[in-house]
Amino acid sequence: MLTKIFDEKKIQKLETYMDKGEKFVIVMHVSPDGDAIGASLGLYHYLMSQGNTVNVVAPNDFPAFLKWMPDAGSVIVYERHPDYAEQLIGEADVIFCLDFNEAKRMGKLAPAVEASTTRKIMIDHHPNPSDFCKLVFSHPEMSSTSEMIFRLLCALKAADAINREAAECLYTGMMTDTGAFTYRSNDPDLYLIIQELLKMGVDKDRIYRQVYQVYSESRLRLMGYTLHEKMKVYPDKKTALITLSLKELNRFNYVPGDVEGFVNLPLSIGWIRFAVFIRENTDGIKISFRSEGDFPCNHFAAVYFQGGGHRNAAGGEYAGTLDEAVHIFEEGLKELNPVAYPKTQGD
Image 1 (tube, one colour):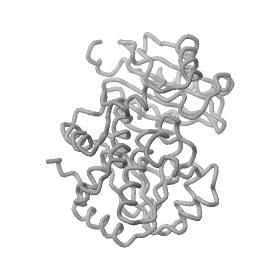
Image 2: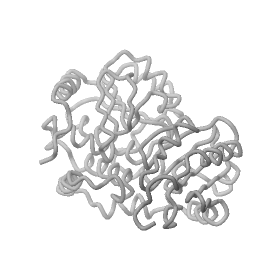
Image 3: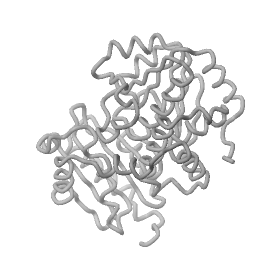
């Protein structure tokens, strides 16, 4: 029996929205990760099984190692088809906003969603949700938005309608947002959910290989170059920084998803508490943060890079140059030193 976490009045309102709707659109954040895609496609499969018209819209493309998921090919990429995506959003009876807590996280897709007067539902596990949706399910204590989708379907007494395709997508989202269940994964309820997903036909070994063990030659070479040439450590701060320019990415035939997980690599060094990955993109500087123990990397992201996220996993952006972003990061380390926070186990 799963612990009850949702307000019953909200569940009833969600049920009313879904019963009255026929055309659904599911949107996610820019640069979608495994949880964003997994939660969206998991909900998509459920809604489709109920005879609805459902479309999933991503602001931009997502990694190749997620495109094996059932019906991933049906995801509409806004950057490629903006007019069609905006038409679908305009015609929707209900818009689900999954795995993000404020409209700006949708990038160029945001204005169309904000302009819609239809029912909008936010389902997310990031802290501090904004109020652009009529119905908000916000639970930062959850491992992932995919876990929340499973729990919501259970609360709606619709668990029996979760087919194998939906289960595979939800499992993928849960797995990727916990680093294959290595962090944010101590809740016993999580493993009750995994048990149920396995009963639905999920092959967890196959999914793990698809996500973590099937890469291109270019990605492996980029990883080697990154670790050997582009990782800088700050021993007195127990911190590591990785940087990659657009020129360096293009040298290795970069495609979306090739640097997924790179920010976690320095944490393999036992004494590192804070890892940062700053990379140049065509539309600015993207920054990823990871931490161990009590160091709040989401606070660091918010103070210096207008970002946010979880205590141990966050992101941010910068509109200037790569060198400027590195300078801001290094200045920030002087004020928010990870060493000042409690030690992690094994230090």
